[in-house]
Image 1 (cartoon, one colour):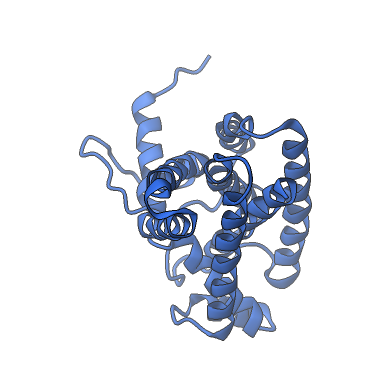
Image 2: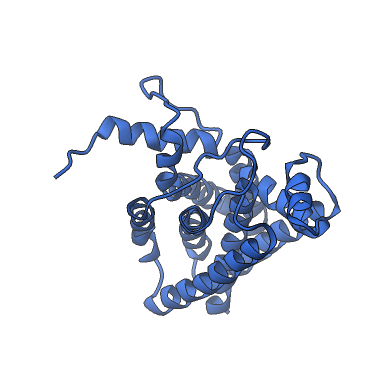
Length: 260
């Protein structure tokens, strides 16, 4: 049995954490180029960190400011902590796939850091949908509905995103891309590890909700993957950000459907 190198695993976790958030790594953590691919299995655990920040801030602000402001400020804090990393990818993807017709054109548009009409519209609608879904959950009988939604959505949506690293090929020119990908491939064992890290939080939900949620996400995962293949032949970093945001919104909407 292979012995686990705990220091290396810690290095991998903080590699993922510092890439996906603004949270700095401790000085004892080391970084190596080869850690970039392996750290992708820790994306869902980074989602757990983000979820705890989001849920805690909402719970603390709710008694003082009420649900509306608590949700807005919780979302703002989450965006600040992550540096709008996934939101930026979602907006770039909207611009690329909305304004481009051929693969080369789509990829070139996504590399452009300027925000276009499709990106601005998509970002606004996505944030509005998140807010309204969370507000809907806040108005239900369960006082923990929003907290549970945040704790489930952030890790699970990041697992949804990294699953494409295992399934699809990275199609952007790494040397010319805006940001070099943290990971361009993922082994089956790493994918299983990433999945195990979100199982515990799913148990916060009822069994029926879990089954429906997994089924809906699987359908979206399949067809979204086919769409990426048909348009550009694989994925880019922006596509992963888009997948995370898309699945996060879907998780909130599914939870809303059971709460009403």
